[in-house]
Length: 401
Image (cartoon, rainbow, N blue to C red; front, side):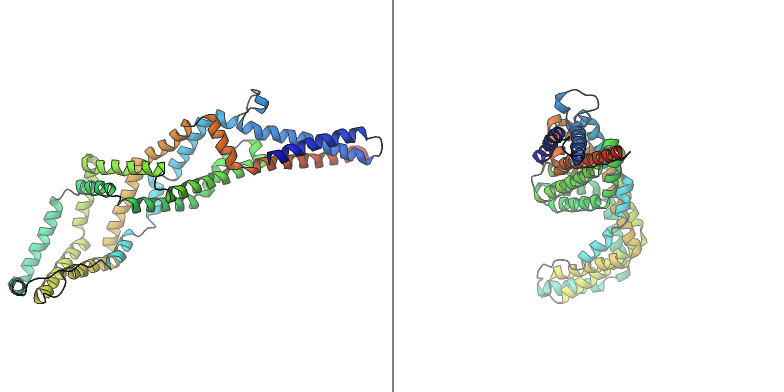
């Protein structure tokens, strides 16, 4: 396309010289000369405008040229700040999380838990069933629920979560979480494309707006971000995935050692334990467990894991049918996501900014110019043709006036 645009400009120059030498033969040749002359002006002007975006025309240090290389660091900071303000702010994450029913999804998943097999000896099972039935159900239930609640209060969940996350990362069980984050990022980008277009339009110069290059740049930036997300989804060794894993590792470390984060986890645990719906669930869980134990004890052929599966299915049903418990879990998920955006959003922004700043000016220029692609040369072609048409109109006005 560079050859086409340059060739068209050379053709207009040749046409101008030919028309100039033959101008005396017929008045109509004057229109051809005016077209070629104005087309050269338009083509040269647009060549200058397109070139000035990425480099100095003819390597001359003309003021206000090589715009992108000169503003590389500012572009990096602006793009990073755009990501921070429109994707990684707690308000944006909270607004997105409000649309997600985490508890409902967990409830639907728990409604069909996996099963496992096991047996109990006939004599031992009968003895266990007799003892279990002889105990006071109300008192035993109260003791069991109190023991569960006390045990939960005594457990420091934050280090456990941190250790579990570290173990998951060590065995690559965190990959589904990363894949989910990437899919979420793709949806967020798709929903906020208009913000990118608006930012590029507002920050573009008058030349870029006049030529329509701002819209082209916005489209290419959006396409580039979509391509980046797709590459992250397809390439397990992508560098941004490595950075995300570093963030998860830091989160696991913070869960185990950061006092402030541990206090927030403990606050959520206390709120859960005080929730009446959660207490009712504990009561229901004990009753279901007791009934399941009795059925297993009476029938040693029944699988123990299957009974635990019933308890899980009940919990899943409770999550789907109890609005207060579901709301508590959804609030926790929302606070966790918002806290992650607040704590680690700046790190992601710095990664983007430092990466772009680390590129040399030639790399930035080449990548952006190739990203915009053929449309840059179409601007030159259109400028040549439009300039020629304007020249014809002006020549006609001059002739008839």
